[in-house]
Image (cartoon, rainbow, N blue to C red):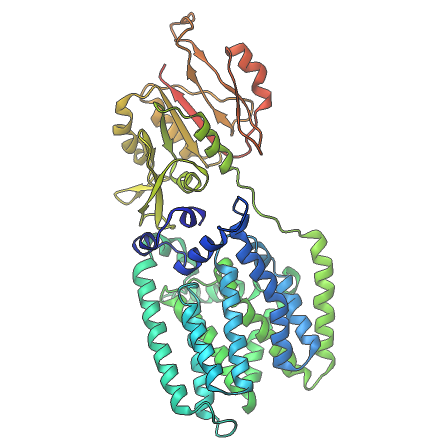
Length: 523
């Protein structure tokens, strides 16, 4: 994501078709202009919108039910959702999509309370404007707009300022636009690699047993992700809400809209249009799920008033107990260490080999000029090509064969690149001691290079430099000078020059957790 924000133009985004909304990338570009440095600026957007959704959802639940207790209940459920909290700190579109869902619901409720052409125009305008910002805005908008359209056509009473003819015309235009947008998205951004990645999250339609298993696992995950871990049983309130709302004439439209939404998501999953149960891809639906559960408690509370009060007591108690034991933090990004060290150490004559899954970190943290290329074999849909002589970004696959399945994929890519016989090769990888790292290292060694680890941490940095001034030791090998590194997380790497003995004294100072950079020199 950060590589797209830093380097992608509008033309790049249209041509590459990454699995990220174009509008969301440009929103992050705007936030990236905020003073200071670092990716925290891009995190501001999902973080602020994530916080704002908690009181907004509580307010909507209160306006829907008229009960402050259920408003607090809804807000508490969202605040206790682990996946919602996690992705409120990530530079991903998922929490922004849930905010858009909530915003469209709020505008629809405002129009239902007082039907006016202005409010209808605002709702439709917002529904259109958010299409480029969210992949899910079209599906949510279709459910809301058509639910309101049915409500208007069936309602023979109430305010007529929003005429039926206007509602039908406006709804028809929005339907045409939203469906066209969905078709364009599917044709431009549904890469085969992405479909394969989510294969287990599509509803199987040719096997009843597999379909039943899907309903009990993936659909369950789709509903329970919105809830705190100890209150996932509340997801049973969703089908209860649909049945209770459909049973009463005043709430029948709302029940029908919920049935249309969940039925539509099942259909989208069956046609491989959208995965269900993917956790992060489900976040956009969290406001709908929580409001459905709230509606079920409201309907039950009409007969047993103690139920809403008991529900909020349970939710608040769970939230108070949850926070101290489950802190949410941003995942470490040690890829920055490896890339910045390579940037500091690489000389003009050095060759650089970048592992397939390291190219995005290089685009994010490196100082080399880069360009973006289309990569249909990747779930990201693009890769970062470093515009530096003597640099090879390994591709994930050749002729449809993934590099994790066949080591020859790596060997073939290195064959021509290593013909130039560079004196030193820096190998940047973000893998954690996986066999693919060894395959790449083996391919480099096969061209007459040697490598050794620097420091005790095997997963750290491995660097060798040729010492042209030293005599060849007994045994026929040429001497080499080892550069020991004292890595400082907040500063730059310091290079300590000296012979092997001096390097050995410095090894203990160097640690890099989890990520690798290796240098190979000709023996």
